[in-house]
Length: 155
Image (cartoon, rainbow, N blue to C red):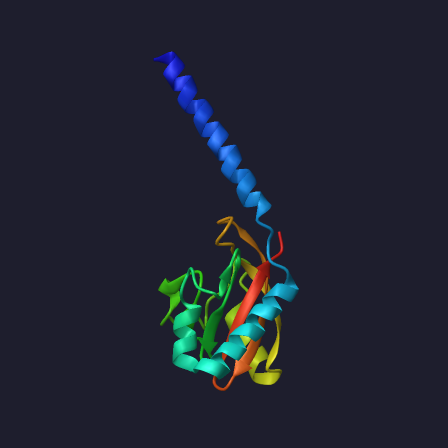
């Protein structure tokens, strides 16, 4: 019995270190990759229309999800239109959501979309890969009455 317990513990430790190493091998996305993802999303919208694009952006295993990089789309009132990492957020108004430091980052994103049309907004958020709160920078571009964004975690 005791030998069996040790084998189970050893197997668990081995698998944990193996899968942990695999996760570490997955490099986090860069800012350039986030910008490229947003530009790809804007092109997809122009080519396929808003409805088809929002559906594609919301597919967790679709072409707009890569490692910790994904596309989200919000309207200018804070309503989540698409989200590649957490489809449960779709249809929710996030206007007043704040990060762990009290920063109303969605309001800042909307202001950026309205005034400049594109740019970066920084805040702290849960990384869907590590499941930890980490500094995040999101790049956004406005299209009509909504904007698309993607971001990087700066761990």
